[in-house]
Length: 214
Ligand code: ADP
Ligand code: MG
Image 1 (spheres, rainbow, N blue to C red):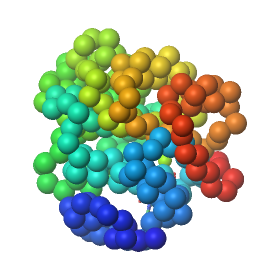
Image 2: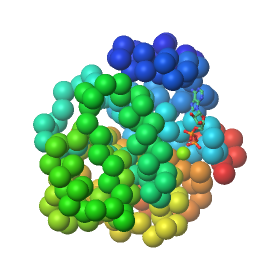
Image 3: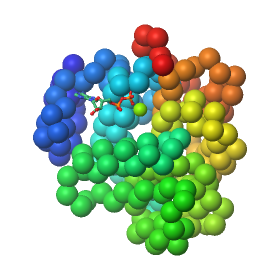
Image 4: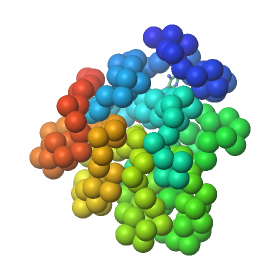
């Protein structure tokens, strides 16, 4: 499957082409069409199979092409287990959003809290971050998720291994409305806590699993 076969906004098509992303990887070919239909997804496939674009493409398409639920609240929240991973996702996202149009905030633990409060006041459409600090901003009321349309958990199994289950549940509870789409990415699925999280956060998810994950 080629990205140009998908009904994507021309700005996103151009950005993908510019970065040399023409042919979708297998996991992207399987996941993106479901994601574009607004379905909840749980995706597992091995490292290096291209899971990041599998969620960034539908996330960007949603922001470019649909009407927001809220003008103030972020539309897409992407959570990653570590600061390093969140930074990488942030850079990939920014690289695909050519021009300053859509506003992205990076919300990491260990960084200045008040600078993040200022960034959140600018009503970013996308937030990429680590769960602990994002949950702190909810508690502080510097962040509201009533208008959140898409919640993405990258490396969900690692987030649970690192003890982020309470923060993930807190974040979910603050963005719990019928219109929210949730996508969960994981290398493994055979984890009791992950199973519980899936049941709590996802609605009738489509499961997409490729080969031996790891
Ligand atoms: P995963 O999250 O599954 O470990 P990544 O999303 O980090 O995988 O992608 C692994 C590498 O593959 C990255 O360097 C990324 O730029 C590259 N990549 C992803 N999708 C494509 C694609 N469709 N065409 C070419 N390279 C791709
Ligand atoms: Mg990944």
